[in-house]
Length: 155
Image 1 (cartoon, rainbow, N blue to C red):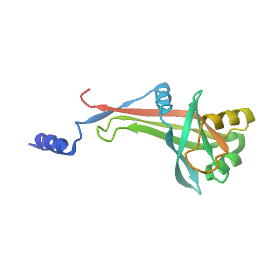
Image 2 (cartoon, rainbow, N blue to C red):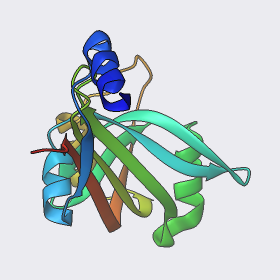
Image 3 (cartoon, rainbow, N blue to C red):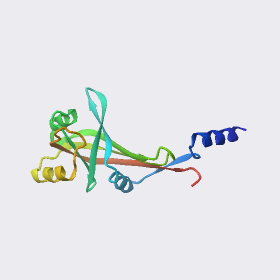
Image 4 (spheres, helix red, strand yellow):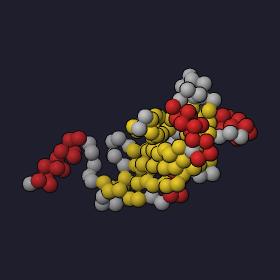
């Protein structure tokens, strides 16, 4: 009786059967990350987690993003110098109707890009989504790349 009720509810809600998470290897996770333009950067601000949506690109295994001069992350990355500041970066592509897709998290050190030629190149490749002057370029060198793909449980 329980299974029948679940099937009926699933049909009414338009949500197909169960799903399972399949772990992605690091290369596949970075490849998927490169297919979407937007993610969320997580960093520590006043000893608490802060999360901001930002657009990005993946270049030679690094995640590159642009920020504005007054951004907290920009200030923290500058203060940390060559050591960088620990961040996590998450992006996903999950279909809301089927609830299938993937999610990737990159964890590593975020540092300012200081080479003028690299900075100019990234400013050309990565256009901000807001009207702010995003003149700062930051790079995340991943130390840990994890991801999952959500697939039908029976497939």
